[in-house]
Amino acid sequence: MSAAPPSHDADAPLVLREDRDGVATLTLNRPKARNALSVGLMTALQQELDAIHEDRSVRVVILTGAGPAFCAGHDLKEIRATPTKEAYDALFAQCARLMLTITRIRPPVIAKVQGIATAAGCQLVASCDLAYCSDLARFATPGVNIGLFCSTPMVALTRAVGRKAAMEMLLLGDLIDAEDAESIGLVNRTMPADQLDEVVAGIADKIATKSPLTLAVGKEAFYRQIDLDVEAAYAYAAQVMAQNMLAKDAAEGIDAFIGKREPVWCGQ
Image (cartoon, rainbow, N blue to C red):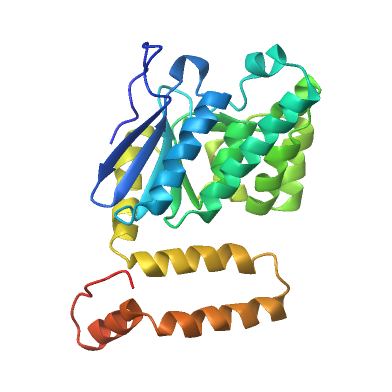
């Protein structure tokens, strides 16, 4: 699936949604603004993600951008138009909620990064469960260059990559290329631009064949255990495993494996 073409219609949706075989593709649709995260765009994306969380037919989400950029971060012109602490507090609270939603909704979210992802756009990539990019993609947390440290992008970035790599990006503010992004763990894999759609579609389709219950249980457990100490993480994970074993899908999956047949999931 190709990225949506640039929209020149001011009334066009800020987020486009396409559903296919359990995979929902959300496309940020402000191409002329490099898909900057305006309040309107964040609101539209939040609404789509909330709806997907309640939609049991969706097993995987692909998040991408229209046009040549994935997302250039916050809309600085919009930010400067209302220079009050109240407006800033509301903006960054909205952004934090959006990023947390990505990690908390049931289906895994895959970032498909075809171009530049900077500041809050880089935060968006780091917040997704998986990320794949073209060799044309570039990433940065450049706030330090304009006197505005990327403090909120830092939260997702430091949980996706190593400490030294994160600090280098945050302190220098330089663009890094796709190969470097893969080497530090910001993305899972980089590839030629003409292969990105096919590869991501294949990964999404493979995930969509799994039990939706198991995907939801696993995703929630992953984020809950990751900040626990090792002993607490094992205790929590053991409880999750025991509860998961009681699910119908677990019984079906194990029986199908023993019987050398394909499982039929019920989502329970």
